[in-house]
Length: 514
Image 1: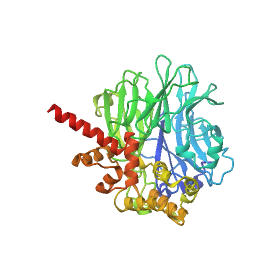
Image 2: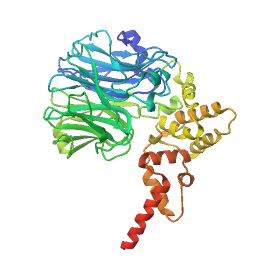
Image 3: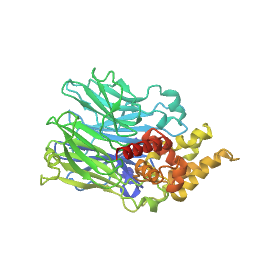
Image 4: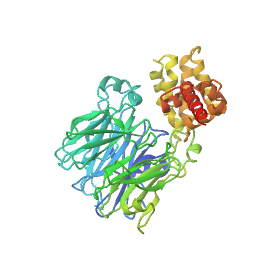
């Protein structure tokens, strides 16, 4: 599965990659930078593979020096980490094709390079770390244990795969512990946040020995604590960090300050910002905007020996598109910033060696022998899952599956979506209608920041005394009726009708005061 042969690696070169994203970064004692991310096929699905690049000058990263691929499977959510012994770890998640009977190899694997500064890198045999998904770097506790954040995904991600439904009983954000420098691993405790998404958690040890776990949730960032070194965890709460449903990066620096990389004061994947805290995450007074553009996400970082902090992220991945031409309209970039604590405190670059928006990899023309759109779409497998639910449940389940809270479904696409949902109850060939609906969701909707609550509020205020519901507002706004209802209730936890009553009460109160 781990590929280092130069001839074999050519099939993973930039010209063969249709899209790319979800990066990790590491820096050696001598300053060599490693970048890892994944690609493959047209979306985050079967056919994904991981690539590893390196640079000795911080400018030229070249083509992959290693790749991870398994036939009829998905290799994804990679992580790179240099441990206290100076060894470079490459982690990746894997699951087999949809016909798998056992599910035994759904898990996290790793390979170790003993000397990442060597002219020729030598990798040990790949090995199994633990079941399910690890995306973020391990944490070394003050008492010496290594804690690896591994997430056991629940129904929102895996339920349509029979092997997951029958084999997974514990769900949520867990930690795996190693007390022998990565030779063996033991699964400790975990927790499920009530607003659980993909977890993608990170662990920070406080000065008093308490361990804080920060998780990705549907709205913002979740927080839980362990007072027994990861064996048990408190119930999850909202950290108050805010931001969209996306991965963050948080860690304690050598200075004792904490670093957080998140989308500051924004609900979309834009304005990626580095922040510093001097009170263990209670407040974040220092901020440096890394990238203000849209669709910049999934930060990973490392504090290097030279005192700089390196932060990587992706921009406009290019996946989930309808054609090669459409994908090539996206930037499809992997970038990094090299900054110091002083830069963040000043709110601007003050170190002459600091830099931002540096390109690690940018895709150009696709040069593959065959367009990845030549393969059958994966909706035929999703169909098996969704066919089991009654019609009234399908809008919420399908929109949730396809991240409906991150998409905009309007215009003709919105009308078609509603028509498909409405036709399900009477369709003679329910499977054909459902398959067309799934194809539309994957290839014809678009990802874009959309302030649904603010937009609904403005529309209601135009005719506050007239009763409205989500479907009525959707028709006025030119968006999908089912999508608007789902997205508004996901964001507010109340219906449009309840929200209108609240606005009326506020308006009545304001009028009486005036």
